[in-house]
Image (cartoon, rainbow, N blue to C red; front, side, top):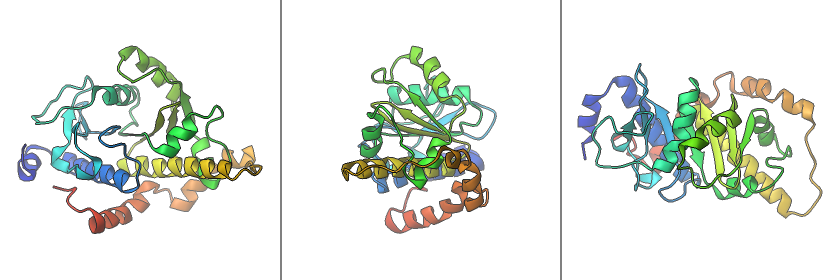
Length: 253
């Protein structure tokens, strides 16, 4: 496999930074316990005119991924840069469909977290019962389960279902977020996962759940922008990287 210095010399400064951020995102997903061994994916578009994307090397744990080990592919999942690793075709079926359909889909993050799958199996989906849930519900779509995502004919239905939303619940399957940046996609997944975890715990308590009024959900995005000063995930991202540097450094290699 190519070394860090070899890969860095072959790509633009912008691509290298995207690689570093994506590798960090993979490791943070593992650190937060949302990973599923070597399965699920986070993909990011390579800055530049080509429709090239970075995705995880199939077979590596998320906690092991580095900037130089990420695989660069085109929209068909073909490698456009030498790599010793393959990619998971099922994973890129979902990701490529969304990347191709939306210019704002610079990063697509997908998980099979226990809480996320639990709520995805519930008919009513995400309930408006927590502060975290209102941000999710303000931009949430659903896609029905069609089996392991291997068929290209599922792509149009997936694209139609997500529309312009930032959050997608894949029923009986897991969670997915879409964003202009890796930092925002991670923040959205943090909110998505938190909403699902709170819901599962609240339901397990057995008491009557108290719903949040629809008019509050309607203003959720404006409230979120006010809290984050319009910066979204970028505000938390440097702190998350500092945490990662303390606990699992080396993602930038």
